[in-house]
Each structure stands twice: as C-alpha cells, then as structure tokens.
Image 1: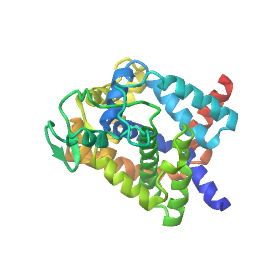
Image 2: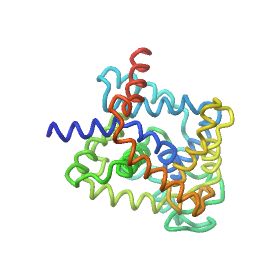
Image 3: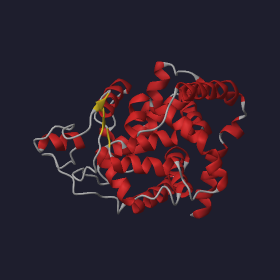
Length: 301
C-alpha cells in the first residue's frame, strides 16, 4: 500500500460533496426491479428521510473510518433493518446463489423486456408492478449492485468537482471501495477484479435496469418528502436538480423526471461553481459531515 494513495482514498471518502450523489445512488439501486420491489414494499422515505439518510451515510463512513467494533455495530444495525426487506423467494442457480433479475427471467423462459412499454438506451421503462421480481436484502448480488452504485456515484461526483483521477489512483480507489460490499458479508471475489472489469459489469448492469411503477413511487417520495423538516424541503429543488442531472437522459425518462435545456444549464453552472469553490474550502469544513456522523455513532455505542 502506498501511503500517498491511501491518503487519497481516505480524503475522497471523507468529502462532504459526495453526499450530493445520494439521491442518484438510491434511484440507480431501485432501478434494479428486484431491489425496487423490495424497497417499495418495506421502505418509507417520505416519513423518515433524515433517518434513512443518516443510516446510509453512517454505514459508508464507518466502512472506511470506524474501528472494527464500531463497524460491527453499524453492520448489525443494517442487517436488522434489512431483515424484513424480502419480496418473493429468489430463484437460485446451480451454486445456490440467487439469480439476478435478468437471469431469473431467462431461466423461466422469458425475456427480460417482454411485456414492458419500451426500452430507451438499454434501460427498460416498465409500466407494471413486476410481481415476479425477487429480492432479499442479504443476496450477495444485490449487495454488489448497491455497493457498485455507491462507489460509481461517489467517483462521478468527485471527478465532476476535482477532475479525473489518474488511472493508477483510480484503480487503487476502486479496489478500496470494495469494502462497501464486503462489510455486509458480500464475498470479496464478487467485487470485479479490477477497474476494467467493473466498467464492463457496470455497463451490463445498467443495460439490464428496468424502472417499474413501485420504483417511480419510491423516487417521488424520495424527491418530494412532504413530512421532512422545513429546512430540508427548502433544499429539495437543488437536490432534485443534482439527482436528475447525475442520472442522465435514459434514467430520467424511465423515472418520468422532468428535465429541460434550462435544467441542464443550471446543473452545469452549479457544478462549475462547485469545482471552482469547494476544493478551496479547508478540509475541516469539507470533512465536517464525516466527523459529525462518526461522533454520533460513537456516542450511540
């Protein structure tokens, strides 16, 4: 391990600006129809948005910065929260692993896009409830997808603000981010072996996404939290702008999220300003959420 490269990774993981990608990561997760159906059946973004945010952010920070005992406590809480999140029992392959949604459909003799309303850029805009989608929050492939969305979103936001990483640095950061899945008992070998393999996995996984009606309802609740504190609701126009802008055209259309040339100009300007200002802030300001969430974690143990 090169000390400078490890420092780069921990600095990236501590950056508050990465939180701007939280909405995008969640929408990517629920665009997997199996994950979306489980979350829609057992989640309540509209009623507890801050608690949901705190749990996710605490886990992400704990995987990098917490002690082993602190991380174990966070993982136990996550496992307890995920216990009820199951849709119908997952079909299994010959090794006993749950089949990914597109593989399960193939095993059942059906194509992944049959019966839907159309495909845009490989992302299927499904119109139904998808009652056959299978999800268990402890399925390793589901854990891989969730970890992948967190890593890829963090990298996307970081590079929009700080510029692209050198390839060697990007490779190291990618390898270290595998802890997001392995901390939840995902076998380490499921994390693609290198960045090139991850990019291939990502392209295939994104092409298989299908946004269903339950996923759209979750997205609406996430982006319009009517019971949230007033200060959070006041920030939601910016949250919606950033989330929609980071998704790209295909997913915006699949989620039926409004976007216009004016929206794109505002989004571009926002990140131009962020790239000019945010890196010049002192680290104690840029890392403040990390420190706050870790203090809260330690106070709760």
